Length: 136
Image (cartoon, rainbow, N blue to C red):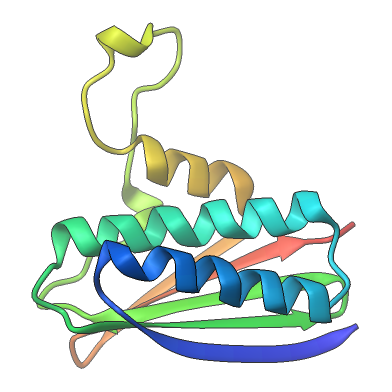
């Protein structure tokens, strides 16, 4: 299994349906299980919605998907004024009822939980998050 796809998306919530289609086309072409496709969708949707919410002036987001050696590599990059490493986001989600939780951080907690590896770099005002999802 080997394949690559990349696309630039407008930094608006209206792009979510196009992103879902992009992921579905990649998953179909790579013959991925529906559960893996759902996890990839969750990972990218969480990163994208945070981007739209916290960096609305940015015009676009680049998403690349690669299947290689029993793993999926997701590259999510965009322009940003300052670094925000999603690995450092902490959500106090243990032993709290939904009403007792503070807002923020839970989506990135899900990203951390579903990803097998996360790397991050910030260079020349470009924020890049790379997520690896193992298939076995």
